[in-house]
Every structure is written in C-alpha cells, then in structure tokens.
Image (cartoon, rainbow, N blue to C red; front, side, top):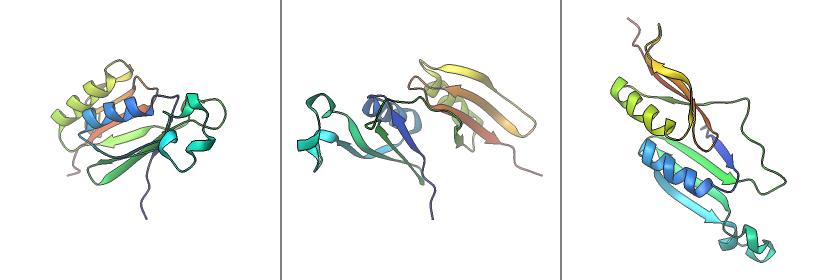
Length: 137
C-alpha cells in the first residue's frame, strides 16, 4: 500500500506541476488534458486545456493532481504536504524554491527536533512543511 497526495488546482495544475518538478527535482510522468481524454467530446471548449490527471515522481514518492472540474474550486484547507529531507542544505534550497512567489508562515530554522523546519504556502496555494529531522542519539 502506498499513500499518495493528490492536489487540486484552479486551472493552473500544469504550471504548478512544472514548478514542483523544478523545485523538487521531480519527473512528470503524465499530464492529461480533458480535451485529450476519451471524454473529450463531452468537455466544453473552455475546459479542454484543463488537466484531469497529473502524476509526478519525486524520489520514491508519487504526487498527483488535477484541475477542479466539478463545481467551483475550493482552496486547500486542513492539510499540509510535508517534505522530509536528510540534508539541511537541501532543506534550504527546496524551501527557498517553493517559497518563491508564495507566503512563508514560519521561516526555515533549527528546532529541538530538526536541523531545519519551516512552513509555507506556495504560489499555487498549496501548504508545505519542510522538515530535516535530527538523528536521535
């Protein structure tokens, strides 16, 4: 069993996944537009470029996403995508990249449990925690 985050976007899923691939060193495995799908004939012309399925490999983890298709878009709430990294320098690079154009909620800093820990909301409205834990010992 594998737990995979799935993010929803307000028409900018493709841009978000390009951004995440650049920030996280991920590889986009699939980016399917509504107008390229088997249901293309039923999709209104103004929705044909929306993404109905995106999948990206980041290390050993998948990240999935899509543009909201059913009803109005609702901004994310009640969750945070946590990125655990092993190296403080990597935590700093990833935090800075994801924070570009976003909002830092807690600056990346050392805590009692982590070499680096910080919280931000990226330019697409996705909340992130970057965590570089200290090795117990």
